[in-house]
Amino acid sequence: MKTTTPGLYEKPALQRTLSNRHIQLMAMGGAIGTGLFMGSGKIIALSGTSIILIYMIIGLFVYFVMRAMGELLLSNLNFKSFADFAGAYLGPRAAFFLGWSYWLSWSVAVVGDAVVVGEFFQYWFPDVPAWMPAVGMLMTLFALNVLTVRLFGEVEFWFAIIKIIAVLTLIGVSVVLIASSFVSPTGVTASLGHLLDKQAAFPNGLFGFFAGFQMAIFSFAGTELIGTAAAETRAPERTLPKAINSIPLRIILFYVLALACIIAVTSWQQVSPSKSPFVELFLVAGFPAAAGIVNFVVLTSAASSANSGVFSASRMLFGLATWEMRREYSGVCRTAACRLSAWRLPPC
Image (cartoon, rainbow, N blue to C red; front, side, top):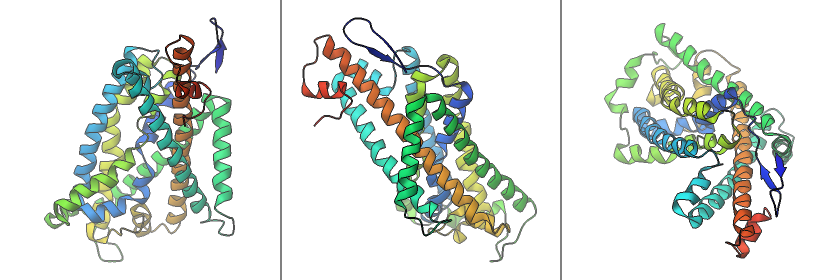
């Protein structure tokens, strides 16, 4: 971060150091939430094979929202985040409410991710208190985000690689099992016919179908990270369209295809709502280390989410502070909330 002095106060400015590979992998990693690895079993048990339709519907609306956000961000490269154009087009009250509510939501989510990391860390070290790895992770991520945004990009790049490898491995193993008509120890034959089972489409009726939306939409948290990182991206007019336009392909690959493979191999009836379907599929395929591997993937996924949260919340706070500083020094804003925002503190 650099500063200039154009008059009355020093004006902070963000540096565009995130490269195309950072943004593309951040977009892919942001599309793969922790819920895909751990919570998808419960959604499949509730909604059956209609879960595929649920993710396609949510993905379509996510694409529309991201496409609109990308258009607005590129219309004025001075916009640092979606709170900026909300203030420009809807007024300062909208920017104030959106910015602080977004900051608050990520502040709570980061703490939740830290708790998840602490719990999964105990899988290997059960005698270690959960708060120690949780606090250690938060301090590490905070230090990385304070130093330079490029470090944040590198961390997210490798976190995304881990998640992508996990999903692609599951798809590859599933294709082999389906092609060989593999029979599981429970007597289930891997087949695409499980996807066409009429009884599995809406096992709990419309209630189960609509309830699936509530849980599935949580998996898409973090896709808006591209908009937050736009102010620190090199050549955003080329990088952002690539990342946003590939959203439909990522959703089909990482959600639709992965869930279809899980159902085709294990069948809807055999999916346990209390266990990770990723672990169960790898165990069926004969990989006894599946639990440890998926546990590591989930841990890195939670750490990735926390890393994104620290970045997004800090950049949103930065945007609010600089925006309120401009208004206060120009004589437009004299309220206590504006002055507190300029001091990087939340309003009372």
